[in-house]
Image 1 (cartoon, one colour):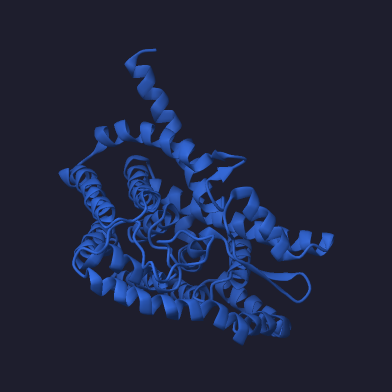
Image 2 (image 1 turned 180 degrees about the vertical axis):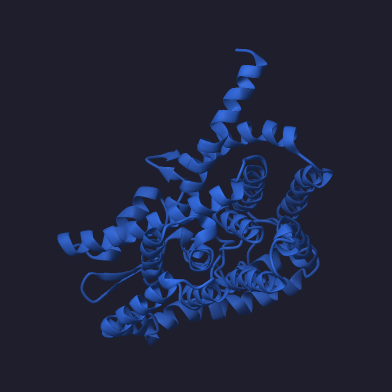
Length: 403
């Protein structure tokens, strides 16, 4: 096979490999299935195919510089963790989280910048994948109703299959609360569907179906933080939309469902805000916050390094020691002020086109920035800011800022 033939093969395989990788990030609860880490296999194949494409199309030194600076960042804070005496396994695992997040952001950037209409294709595909995960939740509820097996038992079996701990709780009958890793994408997809349907070139019927699935999925999610975020995103989407009959019809339909199913919705909300569940989820956060404050002030400038943790306050036995629910405070203790400043700078540089594009108004930029802030604030409640799924969120924000 000649060099030209290899190049053509790489060019043809890039897009399907990219979509397969993005689908695995959104749909699969984790990478492993039957002992095979599908995400890693797709990640490595895509990396091999994407790099020559990037070199051929790289249009400025900034992108190349980022590929050199970010590994240096990881090496420095990896070393700090080792010097601090933390377990090598913990340090390697968090280094992996950062590395996959950084490289996934880069892969999405390569796709957006080198494929014709890449940004729009990426965003529409993400929306379809999130809608599919919403369908999976509906199927879980239907199977629970048909078989009589509790939702929490079904989720436990899925957790065992993928080797991950998914949160779930049963609510009277077959209703249950289900946490999916990619739930954080729901508000962004709802925002896009409500406000940019015509730009996305999605029909009214598909938009109606997707919105209903995602709103229902958001209602079922375990995180209380996602409820106000979803409503906030929907309101902003309607705010920027050029209203058409579809919008009035959807609002009327949604209002009718709320009125008709008010008692059921009230039960779902009341159950999640019950004293027992609130204490179950909030008390550990309070203890962790106190411990992480002390953890930060022990090394405020450079932190304790990757994989580090407050040894006197560790999350549940099945969790990674460094992965606190209050991820922002945990990162502050691990990275210090200097490390956080570097992370924030890297994020703003990656998203800079979203907020300097001449194609969008100042008001739209403010709205998009408020969505980014809401996502970051979520780091106080869930460890969602540094992961391959988070990379999809950053990619979506980047695309939304340049539509």
